[in-house]
Amino acid sequence: MTFFTSALSLDARDCSISRKLAFGFAAFAMAAFLLVAPACYAAGEHLSWVATWGAGMVAIDPGNAPDFTGQTLREIVHTSVGGDRARVWFSNRFGTEPLHIGAAHIALSSSEKFGADAHGTPNQSGVQAGTDHALTFNGLDSVVIPPGGEVVSDPVALGVPALTDVAVSLYFPDRTLASTEHSDSHQISYRAIGNQVGAADLGGNSSPSGPWYVVSGVDVDAPGDSAVIAFGDSITDGAYATVNENHRWPDYLATRLAADPDTKKAGVLGVVNVGIGGNRVLLDGYGPNSVTRINPDLIARSGARYVIILESINDIGRFTSDHQPYGDLTERLEAGIAQIAAQAHQHGIQVIGATLTPYQGCGYYSDAGNEVRNAVNDWIRASPIFDGVADFDKAVRDPQNPQHFAAQYDSGDHLHPKDAGYEAMAAAIDLSLFTKKN
Image (cartoon, rainbow, N blue to C red; front, top):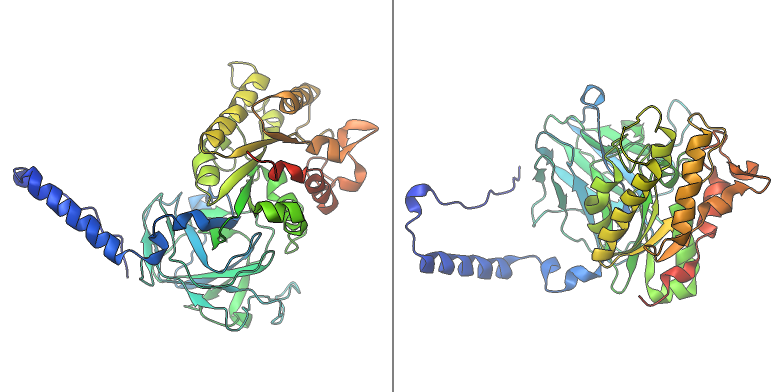
């Protein structure tokens, strides 16, 4: 078992140590670090890392936490940008106890089917021969993540194509109750008994798993490239998109970016979906409010250069049930979104505001709420705080009834698009926004 080492500290009785000795020790420690630090920490090399996939993580209700003790999770994720090396991020953000990962692997996922489960769903837990690599952490094959922490693996020499499925496998040798997840993955992953991280496939030894647990991001070494962060709620997350087909609007955007010669030349190819179903700007909902997500889900993502913000429909829809007796909702939503934009700009990230899609006919619709939606949309279209606008409202609304989804794009709940709607949203994004010199 490998644990993080604690920082060196001096007992009170040692405080008489001379400044000269302390300085000498610090200099020696730094020199030693530079000698033994992995190659991935070489000066400037971090600038080539680009997030190819990611997920916004939320807390799991302890009463419903799955038990992964002695089990392997093989989680399937879909890349956007490709590279010749990869590394993986693991999160214990909402954990209250240390999380021990006994072993972890990464490989390219195989499309081969290994039988089917009781519901007739084919098992696609296999990996492509010759692509499986063990992941290490500062050269060690296991890691313990402190409560609230996140770690990144050492790089592995794995050629990761763009727009392909990758399998990340992790084994939990100790008692492990899950605490951190992305529940609405719209992707089937797998769990199996025992340490199966290096298995060619999990086959009959596995069962399907819906959420993504612990794994929060995958980076590739892609010099000169950068990423777009899709920041939002369930409409960004891909509610009602076809499972396993990668038909969320950020997926369609990634496909467009990869095919467009201008964005390829500009090196804007990564798309990271950090949408969380039920997310709100002003209050925690299912997951933390969007302002508290700025650092972990936007600024900390490798190579982030652009963000598309699609937030606040849940604040509007739930305003009656979660009413707070202060201020004007429209002004408060605009202030919250502006705060996301301001912090993004501070870190050199260009901000694209996305208009809120129609919701007339859905369960929490109100005429008063729709007035707020239209006001927020007018502000997004006109505000100088945005470097560009993605007019999703215009892309999917019914021309004859602009407060309602067009039938060909409506999933049926009058709030979320179906696949065709997500495709229309991605098609409405002007790709020249990613090729202008900033």
